Every structure is written in structure tokens, then in C-alpha cells.
Image 1 (tube, one colour):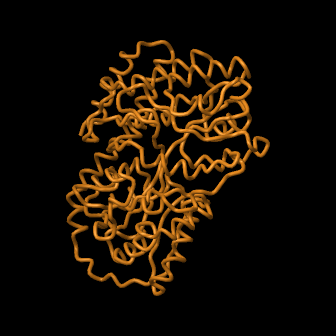
Image 2: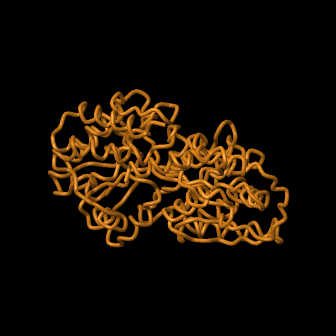
Image 3: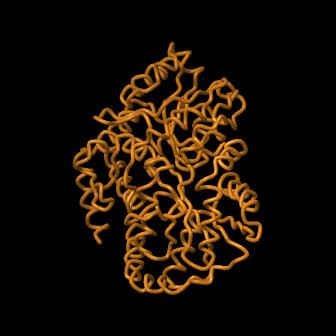
Amino acid sequence: MLKSSMRHLIVLAVLVVGLFAFAACDRSNDEVNEITIWAWDPNFNIHALNIGAEFFAEVNPDVSVNIVEDAQDSIIQRLNTIFAGGTMVGLPNIVLIEDYRAQVFLQAFPGMFYDLSAYVSPSQFAPYKIPFTSFEGRQYGVPFDTGVTGMYVRTDLLEQAGLTLDDVTNITWQRLLEIGQIVYAATGVRTMNFDPDDMAGIRIMIQSAGVWYTDDDGVTPNLNNSPAIAQAFSVIRSAHDAGLTVPNNDWGSFLRTFNDGDVWMVVTGNWITPSIMAESSQFGDWAVVPTPRLDLPGAVNASNLGGSSWYVINMDGKEAAAQFLQATFAGSVPFYEQLLYEIGAIGTFIPALDSPYFDREFEFFSGQTILNDFARWTRDIPQVNFGLHTYAIDEILSIALQGYMRGEDLQTVLDNAQAMAETQLRQ
């Protein structure tokens, strides 16, 4: 799968020159009466677009908004197919792209996306979102939601173990494992879920230290000389060896680990909140504290997992599409307040982070103003360059981690991962 995806990327790169020439063609006819937007997730992104359409209707009632829902993988496949064919036929005016994938598109298809620099002020968004929504000094994406993480903890189980929220606030991962042993001894409940094929936890850990899978250029792999990756691997294996992990292998089993009470904490993006609250029997038993940090200089108790941004295709309707984004995701505090009120969506638009709507108390979390906490932590997320190869390197590191879990030497598995990355990701 990895080699196939890389061959596809190479093919796309070969098309760059032709696509650039095509994209440079005259597109002066920008008079449109409808813009089309592709996105996934009806309860989150699609709902946000429906609200946006209402806001835009007050600004430009002559242009309607056609919202098309599709799965994220399907959208990515459709974009690749159409771009590779060198045609604009079938493309939307606006598309949502996950932040981990953005630079692949911006660098492989120069000229295919509309420069939004005149419509977006990067300084008004969380700084960590800018490197992967921009390219060569130009702003192509409108940053949307934050994947700001937190540590959701069972306060009732902590209490049974003689612990309080203070004991798990602003701690390191090493300290978390020590607390995990205390909780397990007192309650028999383990600490964390573990899927050897999912590198989400590794990504959370290393971004808290301000590093990524690659050097600052976003291209050169840095796997075997990274204290953050080595320590993240060590945390996972130490938790497993201590009997503190619960295995899971898909989304459903991941949800069950905490809904069924198999673990007492979960560290992930804020978008998990509705799933935590879905288990009514645990009403009042949860709280959210800052993400644990690695024990490294400069590491912080804040990180990110996921998040997406909006992009305009450089074709007829691009100006109307840019105006839609400017009236909503790129510049409207009232719009973000309505998102917050209706779906609890936390954006990365800084002027909206001071909204009084963040002071809402969640009774499920014993009255905690969790939105306010997430907004505060968003400002502290370290800025990293996701580059082009996040998912490709995920696959490589998954192999390395499984070898390490079987008892192989840490440096050896990381050296092998480095060699594999250098070979398979060479451009």
C-alpha cells in the first residue's frame, strides 16, 4: 500500500508542469450564481457549512451554496483523479482538506488552488495552523477547527485511588504511568487504549515537544535521531509492559474502551467530547485536564490531533468562493459563536476564542467550562511542519513500534525505520 501510494505521488509530481500551465489559463469569467463545497461529517463540518450558508446569504443573496457531503477518503480520491486528468470538470469551488494532507496537494498541484492572501489574515489564526495552509509565502487555506487535545479522566476512579485532579494536571507521560499503577492497584482499571496500527498517540506526544516525523523542511525523515519519538515509543512499551493498556483495533472498539469503563483516561482531540458524553451512566464522572508532556526541554502540556482547513479551487467562481469564506470561517466572530453554540465546534480564529460562549458549563463534566480550557490550550500548541509524508511515515513507524513491542532494540527499530523512510520517500 505504501509503495503504491508513493508511486501515485510520483505520477502526480510529473504532472506538475502541465497542470501549472493549465491553471495559468485565463479564468476571467467569475460571474457565478452558485458555489459548490465538498466536505465530510454531517454532524460537524456539514452542519458548519449550513450555518455558513445562512450567514453568506445576508452578504451575497445572489450566490447560493451547494453543499455536497462525502467521506474524506472519497474526496481525496476524487481530487487526485480529477487533478491528474488535467481538467477542472467536476471540481467544487471549495473543498475541505485535512491538515496532515494539505501540503501534498499544495506542492504537487501548484496553481490549482486560489491564493487567499487578500482574504485571510494569518495573524488572526492559531500560529500552528499556518505552515500547512500556506506555501511559498502565500496563504491558500482558511484554517478551521482545532484538533487541540486534552486528557479526559474519570474523577470517580481517581478518588477511589486517593487522588485528585491536581495529581494529573500538567504532568509528564512518565508521571502518568506512575499514577496509572496506583489507579490500577486500587480499582483494577487500566490506563490507556492501544492500537499498534494507529500512530495518533505518537503524534500527540511528539507535537507537544515541538517536533514532527521530519526535519523543519517537512521532507527529510528524522526518526532515528529524535529524542521525542524514542521517548514516545518508550512510553507506549512501558505502559504495555506494566499491564496498563487495553487493546483496540478500530473506531468502535476505541470508543468502548472508555464508554465501558475499561480505561480511566483517554488523551485525544476535543472532538471526542460527544462520544464521552454518550455514556449517560458516567454523568458527572469525567473531567478534562491538559495533555501530558514528554520529559524533554521545551515540551508543553498542549498538543493537536487532526483538524482541517478550507481551500478554494482556482477556477470560475473562485472570487465568490473566497468571499463566502471571508464572510464566515475567515472573519466572523458571530459565525463562530453560532458554531460553538450549536455543535461545540472550536475554531482556530483567535478573535472568537474570547467569546463568552466559551464560558458554558457542562454538567456532564461537573460544571467544568471545558470549551474555555480547550481554547486556552489551543494557543499553546507547538507549531510543526507536517510536510508531505505523515501517513506514509505512520505506516513505517507502525512496523517499528510493533517490533519494539516484541522486544527488539529501540535504536535498531528506529534505524530501520529511518532507512525505510529514506528509501521509500526519496523524491
